[in-house]
Image 1: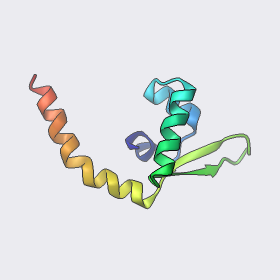
Image 2 (image 1 turned 135 degrees about the horizontal axis):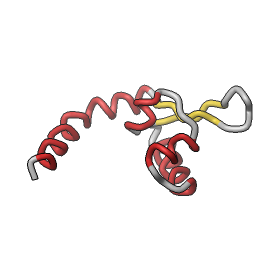
Image 3 (image 1 turned 180 degrees about the vertical axis):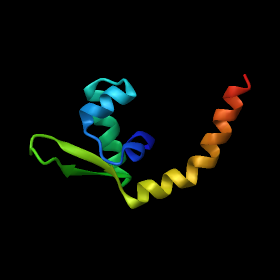
Image 4 (image 1 turned 90 degrees about the vertical axis):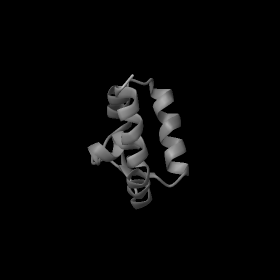
Length: 79
């Protein structure tokens, strides 16, 4: 979700590269986020692929969990 939100508009192929995942893994993650209402798919201009975009609910969820994520990052940094 964070990768999608930081890019604002990204294709599944681009997500594979950013997250260093195989296409099937990325597809599963996108499907789960879509099912939870956190991302949506929008057709690309060329009609051959689609863009994954955060929904308002997805952006709200990121804001909700961001403090806990920052705390976790700080704890890991202290190890």
